[in-house]
Amino acid sequence: MKKYTDTGKQDTRSGFGAGLTELGRTNPNVVALCADLIGSLKMDQFIAENPERFFQIGIAEANMMGIAAGMTIGGKIPFTGTFANFSTGRVYDQIRQSIAYSDKNVKICASHAGLTLGEDGATHQILEDIGLMKMLPGMVVINPCDFNQTKAATIAIAEYEGPVYLRFGRPKVANFTPENGKFEIGKGIMLNEGTDVTLVATGHLVWEALIAAEALEADGISAEVINIHTIKPLDEAIILKSVVKTGCLVSCEEHNHLGGLGESISRVLVKNSPVPQEFVATNDTFGESGTPAQLMQKYGLDSDAIQVAAKKVLKRK
Amino acid sequence: MSSTPQLESFVTQVRRDILRMVHKVNSGHPGGSLGCTEFISVLFQNIMERKPGFEMDGIDEDLFFLSNGHISPVFYSVLARSGYFPIEELNTFRLIDSRLQGHPTTHEGLPGVRIASGSLGQGMSVAIGAALAKKLNKDSHLVYSLHGDGELQEGQNWEAIMYASAKNVDNYIATIDVNGKQIDGTTDDVLHMGSLKEKFASFGWDVLEIAEGNDIGAISNGVNEAKSRTGKGKPICILLYTEMGNGVDFMMHTHAWHGKAPNDEQLENALSQNPETLGDY
Image (cartoon, rainbow over all chains, first blue to last red; front, side, top):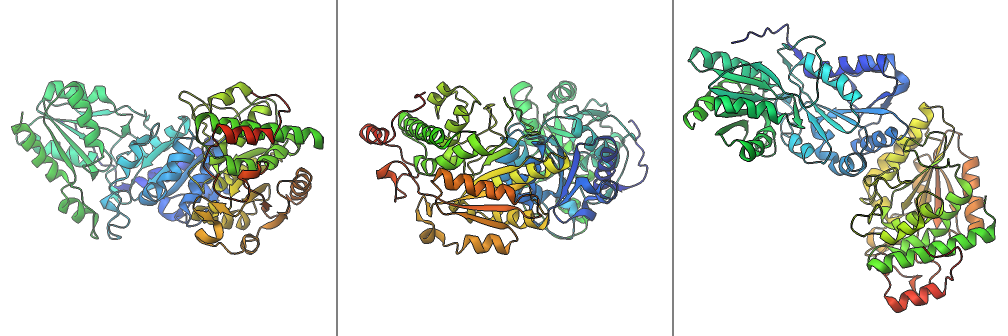
């Protein structure tokens, strides 16, 4: 089992903030918009360094999406910042018509995604956003796993021409991917080679999958671990290559099993290489208040749940 | 710059285009299109500083956004007759494989269109974004937009209206087509909006009214006056009082032609009221 070291827990939203700061220094076309959540989105440094390129929209997310779309017409690269819930469900038609259908180069940057938002509860814990966004034609959907990868993804999407949904979160989590690593949109990352079961994880669940793989190894099970940071376009090749070897797969995500990464993978598997699959995801439910760790345990999204799913899918081979 | 007789000819021909387009496919929105024919014609022919050809970025030229996208027939006709694409293409309105979709879109690459519209209430935010980009680019050109009065029932507009004045978006002129009608009846009956003039003014906009919104001279004077008020810290709103279906007697003074095409006889009657001027497509 390949070893990964947590270099110190950090929140992925701070990775976004760090990436945005760097873009402020390197790309004069990058502008940032926020709907009254500067601190939560870690935009302070960008704003301090580029006050003329920051737009405080107020609590008006629909207007923010439209303004972002309009700014692309003058050649700007707008990064919008608010919580995932207010970045997607609240403004779905604005994104659909003014950004996706209009082919606008807007980067929709969404923090506090999923259950790990914690105590604020279900009103703010969106578990449907990946599904909503991946259904929009032309929309790229990215859910990086840690601080370093979120920073790299933030920088990478500025170079990509087209609408992007970048999803990240609130809690401090293990930071284990390389500092200043290259981020390739649509390219999965092989974290650990194994032979018995494939664990495909995205976002916060990548680290959980690595912990699970270590525990499975102790039980004599060799788990392959793949980090799928880009849900759309999905790196089908890395998944198909893996299941040829392992013959079964567990998808892991902080999202509803309806509409998430797991379903995207299922589609690829049934079309190309049908193998048993288990889903570590929420089960068509809303969340609730609690600490992130409590919620991940209660809703079956932690490393223990991944181990259980891996053992279950192995029996179905 | 076109003279008034030239503009009158242009407007008459655009009316013919609108009528023939919606008749051919038996769908589309002639009423609002006819009501805004003079305004959009004057804007494109005499007011806006436009560069030849079409670049999406629109740098160093004035921009126009149509928020009430259902009046696409008038938009398409004016765009074609202003040189953005061949007028023959008006033949393809709402047909399969056409760039002239039922509602305007950038998705098929039609020159002159910079945003998709049709789902109402989104155009003002987009126009504000384009105006902000112009300021960042030190581009002194203006941004224009057109909205239906009924469209103002969409809440996003009021987010945008609040923002534009709070942030001094003063390189922007939004025009509201006040025809007092929407699909289900008069705007007063469907959802009374009170005084739009007072609403915009209380939100901090500089408001002008063009009482004769189908009169070429009144439109020119009003929009030029609006232009003269830009750059003074406030966004500008023009309340353009129009008659839906203008130029076709049986389509006026009713909301019946909001989204209905004329039949063969009605088309013949309507065209006879608007004889060919610049040549049919």
